Amino acid sequence: MRQAAPLIRLPARLGPGRHGRARFGLAVATALLGVALLGTVAVPVSSAAPVPQLVVSPSAATPGGSAQVVGSGLLYSEDYQLQICGNNFARGSVDCAVTSAVSAESTNQGTLTITVPVVIPPAPCPCVVAALPTDQGPTVTGPINIGGAPHQAVPVQPPEPKLVIVGASLEGNTQPKEWLGFAASRTLVLKVKNTGSAAALDVTLAASIGSTPAALPALPGLSPGQVRTYRIAVTFPAFSVGSTELSGHVGVAGSSTVPFHVSISQHPWAWLIIFLVILQLMLLAIRNLARRRVARNSVDSSDDPGPSSDGAAIEDTAQHPVLT
Image (cartoon, rainbow, N blue to C red):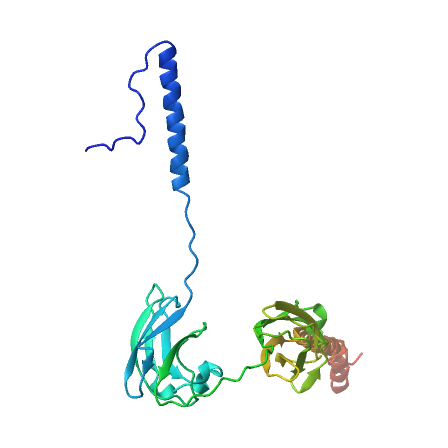
């Protein structure tokens, strides 16, 4: 096999004396320079993630026709629904022609190409083609001009907060007193994110255990995009058996709320153990009473005298007198 030539060729022969040392120093310097250049070239260059986008062609179409949609920067290998939407997709799917939606799957590079039918959406234009992922993920839109469709300026929505519950759970271990049916103390852990464009100043939290409202404190607010974890002490009622659920909702005054549900399992096993111990003691007492009664009866039967031999001799003498 033919070997590759080295990148840096050193002198094959270095003569003695001053010239040899000079050539040797030059070769070492050249080798070090080459290594430095190679290290410089090998530094990787990072590239930014592509921005999700849809390109509609042609950008102007008439109802009854079709348009080609090319997407890039999408989720990898994800199923998308593509819909013609009015109102610039401001209210979501309510602005879209859902019955004319088509489905497509993106490639493992996050691209897709599909033809969509052009229809007049239920909301006035400005119109877009919206690609909605079937799983959780961002919706991507691309503008399209539909001839003959009504147009209306999209009202500017004021910024508002929007809360999303990232996680809800209960923390705390079962205490020995709970085995006797006493109240159970736990910590409600709520992880909440504000996905809206305005600060959530007054976060409201309402919850109940069954039909009994639970007393919960006021919660601090959230700025846009902020994630906060709330930890609230909760007491579950005493003498509960089985699964006990704490359900509630978190929201901002004047806006919609988001629900949550958590539960614990309560089983006062100590009462069952106490009942079994008492039952065992009762059975032992009954057994001991029966043993004493049997022993007493056996003693009474041994103390009762039977017919003696002297009495029999006297009776025989009476029947047969003895002459002296």
